[in-house]
Each structure stands twice: as structure tokens, then as C-alpha cells.
Image 1 (tube, rainbow, N blue to C red):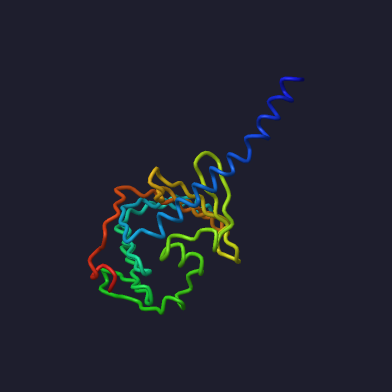
Image 2 (cartoon, one colour):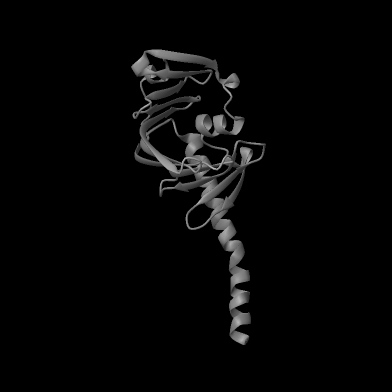
Amino acid sequence: MKKFLVLGSWFLALNPLFASDFNQKINKIETTYATLPALQAEFIQKTYIPLLEETITRPGRFFYQKGGKIRIEYAADPMTHYVSDGRTLWVVHPKEKRKETYALKDSGLPEEALNFLTELGGLRNYFKVAKGEGQKIVLKSKKKSTYQRLDCVFNKNYLLEDLTIHSRSGNTSRYHFFNIKTPQSLPAKLFGP
């Protein structure tokens, strides 16, 4: 019993250290993304749809430039590219040679998703941030959202490596990012239709 009390006392004494380490990690993630001029990566998206009892896998590429510029290219059918210059969102369907144009603020994307994708920092501004299992960081929107939570895993350079979106509909989408690069800039043509 005495050993248990001593062990329990050590755990309680060390618990603030774990919280401090976690807060430092969140600070480093936010600082990394706040100072990042550009980012590019390849990804594999796997979405499980319980209603169909099916997993859909789609490969793609992701590009980000400071100022809210993003480009997400899905390579599999249907081939779709989501492109934004920070003000306008284009949904491009290359095979059909068709595009849809939206004002970014009127695109229907949740505010925290836009900020997460276009600013990639300030996690605590839009999310309740908690430590998950293992290396996971759990994000829950501070506002009503279409998803329950985001599970994130960041690599040793504090860059997002795995993202799992748990939607309220029951679908789960997992993105695994690889070949992650942080160039100083990317060609401007990437961020226009």
C-alpha cells in the first residue's frame, strides 16, 4: 500500500510536467505554421463510409502558400482539384474541362476548416486542443461543425503527417501526408484555375 501511495504521489507530481510538454508541443506547432512560407506534400485519403460498408481510397497532392493560397489535387476518379488564391475557391474537374467558382467566404466550408487549411496555425483560436492516445492531438471545433473531432499526428518537425476527420455522419476520413517539403515559395500558377 505504501508503494502505491508513493507511486501515486510521483504521478501527481509529474502530471504538470506532461501538461507543460504538451503545451510546448502545441506552441511549436503553431510557431512552425505561423512562420512557414510554403508547404507541399503528397497524400493518401482513405474514407470509410459505414452506410456502404466501404472504404474509398484517393491519392493526391497538397500545396500551401502563405496568404491563404491552397491547392488540393485528387488524382483518382473523380479527378478534382480545389484551388484558392485566398479569396476565391475554384473546384476544377480537369477531365470534364469544367470549373466552379465561389467566393471563399461563401463556399460553405466551415470557418475553422478554412482557417486550418489556409493559415495552418493558431490551433487554439478555433479548436479545443487535447492530448489523445500516443502522439495524437485531438481538435474539437469551438463552434458547431459537421465533424466531431480531428485527430492529428505531427512529425518531428511539427508538420502534420496524419489527419483523421470523424464526421457527425459517421464517415471517417484519414489523410496520410508524405514527401512533405517546405520550399520558400511555390509557382503562382498553382493558385489559380
